[in-house]
Structures are given as structure tokens and as C-alpha cells.
Length: 118
Length: 107
Image 1: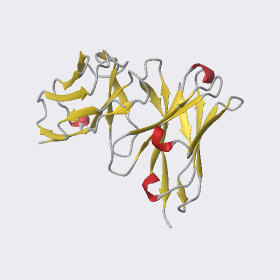
Image 2 (image 1 turned 90 degrees about the horizontal axis):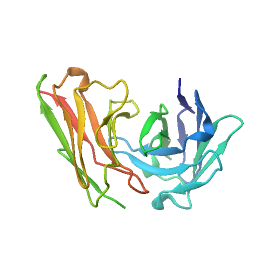
Image 3 (image 1 turned 90 degrees about the vertical axis):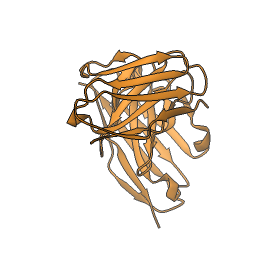
Image 4 (image 1 turned 180 degrees about the vertical axis):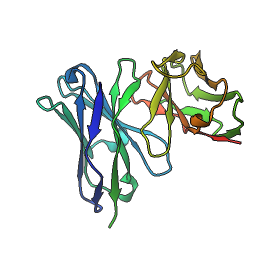
């Protein structure tokens, strides 16, 4: 069965970076794009970007350009999302979500809470 | 970016009631509209894709309709387990954008 398993919660200081992983299993890793979506406490869903696991190409949300980097490791079927220059507004639960071909997310990771606090 | 206006932001209904949520896109998105259910502390769950297609395993009391700019999500008979926040999402073009969410509670 398809599973997306994310890394554990992180606490970071302002200005630091965080790298969240999402390990995929149960399907052909390179056949489906992966998105990252975040949700600040009590808020809605915000799209962060997309990565093509086949060739590593990416497209990022404009507001995060320059701070976010998405990568993948095909040998371990894992995608990564790194966010730098963290600020308090980046405190959120970060999700990876598989794009099931029509831009809908049929499978999600369990979420990773990133807390940015001094 | 395409803006998605979802309403209401919250509603309270009785078990067995018909519940309707609307989502309006700021421009024509054809039928590239999806609906998700999110329960507290959990990841969103896909219910409806491409405006009206029921995801496998989702109860038939959930349905969606619409195309272009105006979309509707319906729960035909509200059940206690349907207490959640519901989000619409467009994917006509990047970036994908979500509605603000509708929190559904039991009266």
C-alpha cells in the first residue's frame, strides 16, 4: 500500500534552516510528482512547491523563492524539503502529498511540525 | 494566482441534515477542483476530485458539482463522523490554491 512517512518534529531558532524528509513506499517513486503543503497553527493550507522525482525538476511558490529547496534521492525513494532563514511565521505542520495525475493529492504524509522559536 | 473563495467559513447542522459548501474561483478553472476533509491533528483526506468524482472508498453521501468558476460540495445526510474542516483546491494551473476552509460542527 502507498505510504508517505515523514521525519519527526523539529524546533529551530530564527535564522536557522530545517530539512524535512518524506519517504515513499508502495509505488514507483519516479512515476508521481510530489508536492509540499504547509499549515500554520489554526490556519488553512498553503502550497509550497512541487518536485518531479524522475528528474528532480522543481517549481516553488513565489513567496518562498530563495528560501526553499526540494530535492530527491531515488535510491531511497525519499523527497526532501529544506527551508532556510526561518522566521516565526514558518511555524507550521509541513506535509508531503503525492500528485495523483490531475493535481489532486490522494496520499499525504503524516505531517511534520516545525516550530521556530528563540 | 487564482483565488478560491469558500463559504461559509463555518456551519452548524444536525445529524441527518443536508450540508452544502460553495467554492468560487477567481477565474475559469474548468473542472480542476478537488475537495478535502481534514480532522484535527490529521492530514487532509481527498474526497472529491475533478469537481464531481468520488474518491475510492469515500461514502456516497459526499458529492461535488460545478465547473468554470462555481462549485458545490454536499453532504446529503450529515453524520457525527463528518465533523471536520473541508477545503476546496484548484489545480487548473500552478500554483495550486486552496479555499479558506469550512468548519462543520454538529448542532
